[in-house]
Length: 314
Image: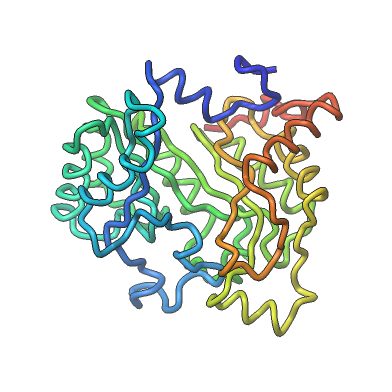
């Protein structure tokens, strides 16, 4: 068991170690696009992507960053008046702009009352050295985390879903970012088309060799309005969408092979019903997480049980 008595290194434990108070992420849509949409790398974006599926209701690109933070803080502060906040630049590629423009956006967020740090989601091929220099300096003064969309460690999968970058680019940028003492996270989708269960579990072995602070996992979801939704309609046999019970076991199997030093931020995601085609679990994220914890305990196992320290290669 870990220090919070959970069978995995939970993200809440990470926040508790970093902050003396409760903290909450506030998602910000700063109006970015993506090189995989505007033509610099590709058109149409990743085949699974519909940004509406993970943008909360209070984050509107028609509002300024400060207005979005104000809305988000109003949403959360009634329960915990003393809570502090992290500005989470989430939608699209949040380092894809000129350096001056990016810094203005980040500084606007950091200057908002109650905001004590930044989390910036981006692609591993959209992090110029000058911006890393900025984050390196900033991280000495305040909380900074950079999250990279890795999605798969298999290049054949990345090509199939039109990511327009390789796993080697992800691994290199994660090492570069962590090497500057910037907290570094990764995002993975479990169940992308063409991947076997063993392929999925091998991601845990591969990621364990990287200097990651945190890891986000979630199940593949088929979302309306995406290229993948069309592919799913035409070639449903190319997909294996996990049933809930099957996915719970997959998460435990995955965590068993994962470096126990990596904080797991989440195991699952819940897209709005109006956008979701499949799988229709109809379960809140926290309910699925509770079921995963129960399965860990039933199996008398824990994160890192099958991890070998010899795998470590930072």
